[in-house]
Length: 261
Image 1: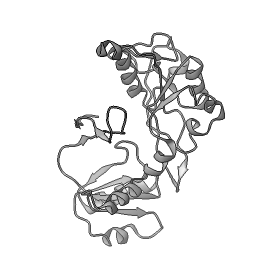
Image 2 (image 1 turned 135 degrees about the vertical axis):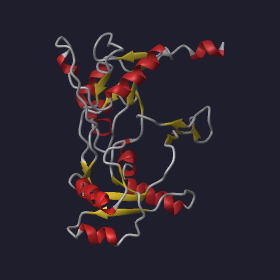
Image 3 (image 1 turned 45 degrees about the horizontal axis):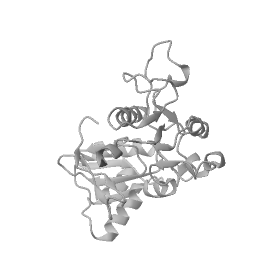
């Protein structure tokens, strides 16, 4: 039956977490996801540090295996469902090759990619390109669209989206107060990095002094930041999927309300 056919999978999936730092792009480096957890002393030394979306990788790997019946390739045998390490491979060239040498047919890139990422540039990884599929976004496209200012301008120019007012604020050595006073700000105002990770560096500022302090703090790690009008209300995520055999056009997964994320 059709249901039985869907339950038979030949894919062998390996998850990739972020282990390499993003490059500096237009003077801005996207920060890595921090982490680190204390594990029992007998835990494999190679997985002592839980960083770079290993928690999300563990969730994906566990559910693909237990709910969808898909075989998961892992760096250690029988990783514990109680720990989020041991379920995924680092996204370095050696980490990717380790997953491929273990027989992965699909690489699930649950990581930050960019034009110079090993998935894009490694000749040793490229030798597998006709045998292996990658679940994730094209690295060159991600590098371009990771710039929130670029994307916001693109959306505004299309005329099809309603966006909050926003400004690009670059650290050019001028007086901060004068720069902020030159903008038609309405409080609360949100300040955030141009290339951010999740909610890193995103802050709702309720007055001028709070905004000034946040801008100065952001400039210490990024020479270009974004200020936007605050949008009140509930936060939600819409995941847009590309066309496929089942869907002729782009389509969306159900809206997911975000909390404590």
